[in-house]
Image (cartoon, rainbow, N blue to C red; front, top):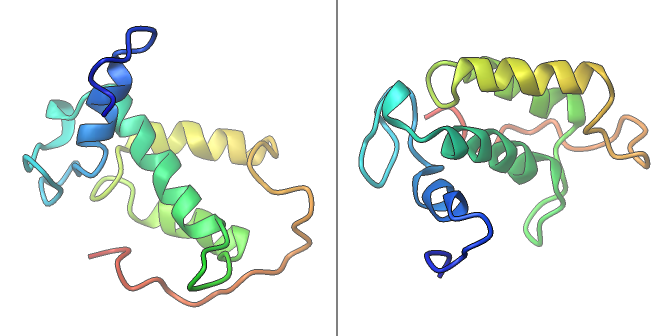
Amino acid sequence: MLKDISIMPELAVGAQSHHERPDGKGYPNHLKAGEIPRVAQIIAVADCFDAMYSNRPYRSRMNFEKAVSIIREVSGTQLTPDVVDAFLRLVEKGEFRDPDDHGGGTTETIDNIRK
């Protein structure tokens, strides 16, 4: 679907590979660490955070601190460490917390994280 995007062709690469993991346990090609395109490494962190910190039809969003702690925890296995570090620096600056978030959100663990 994204292969014909001419303004940012790297988005198609990122979409295809953003489920790859530095530990090689991702998909579709089981790429490891530096084999994963940089744009996919960045999208992976954003997608992970969005999956946890967004309301879904089947569950409420996760507590902000819990979502950030899981991202920190999976750095190096599921997510690229220096991309996570950049994400965490932005978190410290207050860039990602929803302005309407006053400390709520579920603290339940999501089953497909940390596998």
